[in-house]
Length: 351
Image 1 (cartoon, one colour):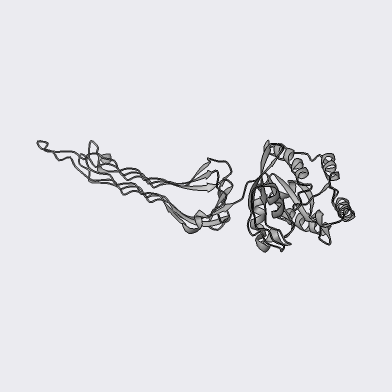
Image 2: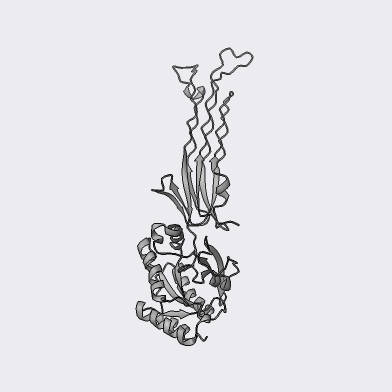
């Protein structure tokens, strides 16, 4: 299924039904009174967050959504039927923005959450409504009120327990394939991944959702390489796993490039818990792994975990470090990184 994280759609709620002008006409009733019924109310346009969806591809080919108009009133005091509402079923994590993208109308973060986007038009009154002691035979009725219509943007920000970030070709897709049943495209050139991928990782009988975010480049927070759209997905991740290509000439510079983009983008990204993984260590000697890991530790004063997504070494150790942090994040508590635990897992690496 193709991934799409942004779509523009037109929505229109239903118009209200018009009232009816009618008078009672029966045998032996000389002066039948007014009996024109009211119209029906127009249908609403509602957005609903549903599970088991992770793309907006359905809204690429159908871009107009209109609710049903209310039916007009009829004689014999019959009220018109209300229009049927239209429900837009959206993935959890979808934001709904105005046409100019300046304001957020709604943010769907919980399954089953519903938001009224466009209210249906009110009904028009029939002449029965205007009957009074001084006006026994009114001939007045009202048309229904028009519904609302406008364009909106749908923007999906994937909700995952952990997000994989790093420069292009850092091995994020390989790590996702090694830990989940997801099968992203993997190749030996940058920008192989062009859209986020999701997978469910399992460790010690527990499961959590892992998101592979396309590689970030310098200037990503300004939109270079679609970076601002990719960073939007990172916003909803509870914990970040920052993978660094161990075969790079300068691993410290690679870390700082991505870290600078996260800090510049803001939106809570600088405050997220971050685990550092030195990937592709199967291509390095034991001395080279130690040298590059030590350079990273000295530059950023953080624990660094060597691993290899291809061979699988160090992968389970890093998942076991992520699991308790994700559990605490799910419980809305600020997790504290146990550096001793990370150091112990790092020592388990053997090339």
